[in-house]
Image (cartoon, rainbow, N blue to C red; front, side, top):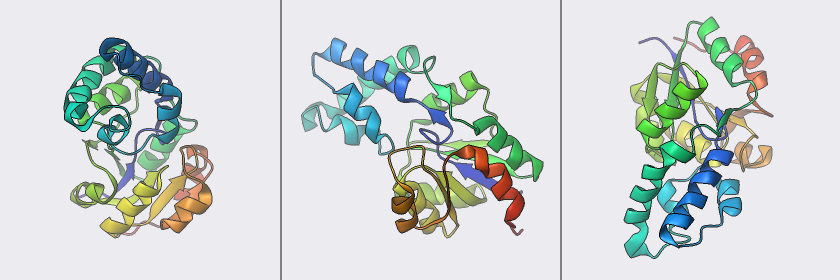
Amino acid sequence: MTIAVGFDLDMTLIDSRPGIHAAYRALTELTGVHVDADLAVTRLGPPLRTELRQWFPEADVEEAVATYRGLYPDYAIKPTVGMPGAVAALAGVRKHGFRVVVVTSKLGRLAALHLAHLGLDYDELAGDLFAEGKAAALTEHGVRWYVGDHTADMIAAATAGIPGIGVTTGPCSAAELIDAGAAHVLPDLTGLPDLLDRITIGP
């Protein structure tokens, strides 16, 4: 299997805050349950249920998840933009002959809508996975480096036994990413092609 570089999605490849904000506002309007969208978009990364448990009683969480996901395609896709350097980062991976694998906590079919809308080309996509739960997918798809913005992404890489590359475009600082095991930390994806030129990824 050809070597792959793995990427998280939210706040790594895409800035989904405007779209997620709109989806949470729509959820509030539909359910009558207040979700502080401004706050929610500052802590993207963990699974949707983690956030919704802050606002809905446990007995209503699964219904809220289903409702939110039903609203998501209409509200969250168009406002979302690519992160700085995302297109060039994927091109840098391709230049080395590596595959692109996206492993995200977002539901796979919703992640695919984002990637298609923004024209971000990938080879494999695994969704609805978080932290250690991402490790099996990273291993299955031959990922040799995993790029993410959250400490949980660095934990995923460590669990899979591969180096993590942190980007400080999400809620976690460089120090937090390093403490979580990041082998490299970049301000954003614009530096990834140069980093890939400097490091050696063995067979």
